[in-house]
Length: 171
Image (cartoon, rainbow, N blue to C red; front, top):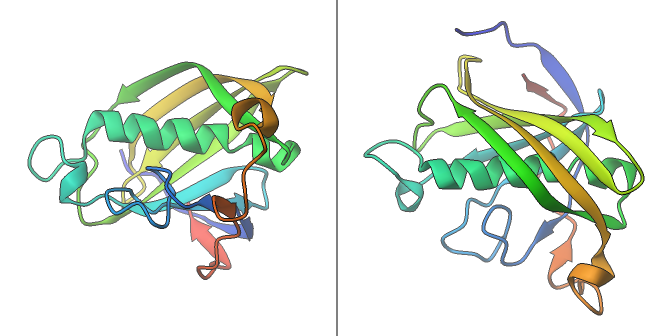
């Protein structure tokens, strides 16, 4: 069922990487997703699935959808601790409607619980009319980037997203 879409102010854009499948600017097979910090404390992303992200004809593959929501919910940590990265412990999804190819899709995530070592969150993928197509909940271990990528992430692999930032998103 479609919900009434309301504007939510965008606070800032999140960093992207060079080769990540979800946000990687240079990954020719990737989604090239754009991530935003919203003024209400949530994180949103915009992406357009292409033919190479297909499951059934005209529909985005469920595994790619899972990857989007995993990345999005994990990015909540960038708001509270930009030096830490999220490593997935558990991810659960409910697929309610197909996600189309060739149309810009919005997704949003928010924190539900956080401790010193672990945080949890929820996320949704919204269709153009506001219908929730997919719901997810996840749990992550907080890790310093040095533990994940010894030497850290060089500026050529993790950097500011230079694409325009909208003033608000309808969510």
